[in-house]
Length: 399
Image (cartoon, rainbow, N blue to C red; front, side, top):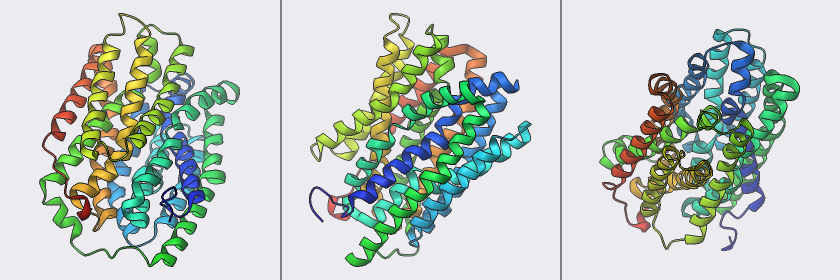
């Protein structure tokens, strides 16, 4: 493996990168991108609609530890492929629902697809295959996948205007089946062949997860990333109504929401350029401080509408760094033994945070308006930053 290509298979990494981009656009960002159109067409209330996404994220949180165990058993390629295909099928079903019961059922299936095919399992798969070289591969994946929201919001707006929200959902479902699943399958097969030629993946010892759960570091890492995830999900779910409520036009709101993706990429590029000069824990603290500042920027938007784009820069850059840093910090704090199961278990906390964020956000908006939502997001970021002060990492050689 060369220094420039620690994975030993650059095409496979880029395939996973595009697979994650299409996957996030189709399975996650599609909700925020189509929310206004769905609400206007169906007449279903925003809290009722939010239960669908919340249910998906709860199901994802419940099933992701089992997905992690499949990674440890060497079934990562099958998991990523099957999850993407299942998500596409669920989206096709979602496009045909006529009531809230069907809406909730389809989102529950999407939740299973999320746990099997998105970041958590992709990164666990790469960490198992590449070991200490996984960080470089993860950065490559996230540099591209950070554009998922940039793809989802404009494409969702264009499709919903042309063929309605149901036609838009069908299009995203076909993307999952026709593009994401084949990309994940081919990439997984290529990386598995590389592993076999290189001597195989590390042996997983029984009880690794049980031992990890007993350590304070497990819960501190879970709590820090859980609050970060809830902060981001609470805001991203309501980007359009939030921005328009602050006085912007819908067109400007779509542009601002679309800017978050490129700034995610910018944050990851900055992290990549830093290399080892800034440790993982230091970078994590900086990212969470960025989330604090992003909520503060929106709270001050009355001073100038341009602060909406300052928010996009800070929120995007910070959450972009967080998505890379989580698997690396887990490995540095808890080691790589049983990494799939451990990272899957830790992922339940951010996923639960993501799950309850739309409902909490809707309740805050109903109770106190936009100011209440922004104050809630600010407090989450502050708590997450405080938690990182208690985290301690192991020596690099132990990772």
